[in-house]
Image 1: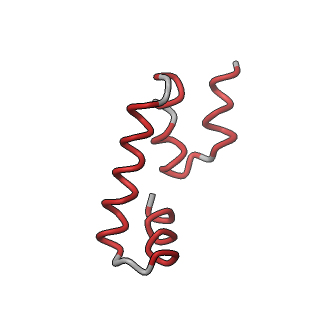
Image 2: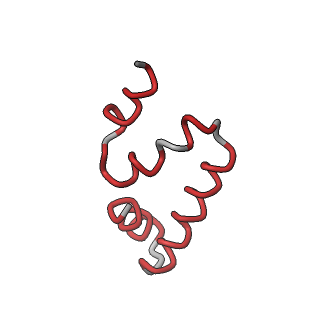
Image 3: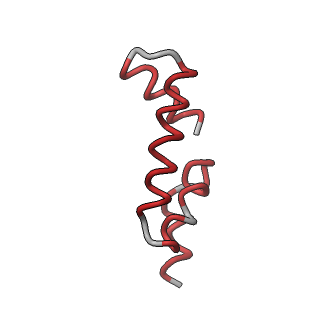
Length: 60
């Protein structure tokens, strides 16, 4: 998540603390709106698990 926070801070010019709040808000929104099997994979993707390896478990 740190990489995403840094990217948001860089692209928007907002301080990292504020970017972190924005990223967490979006992540929590997505978790609430997506179907449970997909929402449960978000933390794995954000923590650096990689999209392919994380989502690969959904199709087995």
